Image 1 (cartoon, one colour):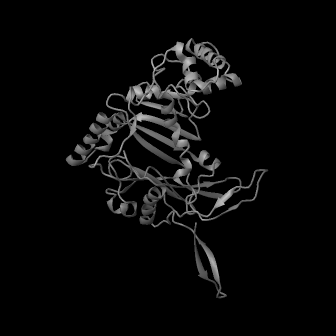
Image 2 (tube, rainbow, N blue to C red; image 1 turned 90 degrees about the vertical axis):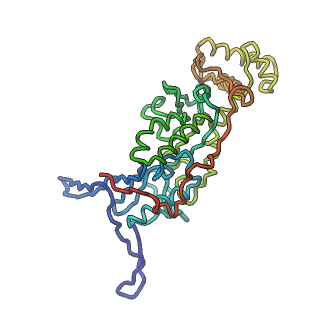
Length: 385
């Protein structure tokens, strides 16, 4: 809902609410046959940009919604995209402006709503709210090392013992997904995947009707990911996570607020970046690294490793299990996960087995356009019914 200040009949200023235009694919009218009350609803409209990219928009006259990947919109790829929340929102804003809708504004204040049905009062902000946000990072593991790297990651849990799932083609490992949790988590999602496989999977769609120059550029991207062995981290934070952690208010939330959660894969890499060890040296390793302070505790943890190695039952609810798990995680072994001898225990030592490093875009890479002028460059913008 938009507001404006007008002068009323008494010559005084008055704040008047103005209904916004309806924007969507269809408008539905629902009639309650008992009360004859009529309610309206507007369905989402898909805006298609160039290179088979799209965004989704909706306005029911009171609220404006926009969804989709701004770093991908109007671009043939998004291997590297926008780096700030402001840049992403600005892409939405230039599109909203072109459609005669108000832009998303930053929150500057809030108040608490009245409590209802025994529930605690909720914060109500005076600006736009974020319901989903993704962060990505590109890593180079070396040509041909992508699958071994992902298999190593797939031996480790994240958070509170959230199990990984390695896809059958071994090109993706995920946590919180529907393959582990029924229907997937409504809280967050995390995956790491081989970027070459992803580019090849979308080759036909992304290069449909493109110029020879664009096709050659896309092929160069594929070759770049092959030579460097590029894998991509993708962290998704969903509505429930943002709401529960008070990270939904645009203007108040900052990129740094997610920094701790974004270290999940880095922490796994640090666990695995140790030299190869044999079963007989587990206790010695725990003592040498100061994880255990005496031989008795080191031997106890080694016993738990032995149980895990041979598939014996362990009560994961016991405090002893959690303590031994904590110790073994520090040397790259996650006993909360079922042992798969084809995947574990792989060791990632940057200087010995797989060198893992963040990778920068090459000079010829087409960086995203400044979002303040992006609307001028969004070719073939059209509505998709």
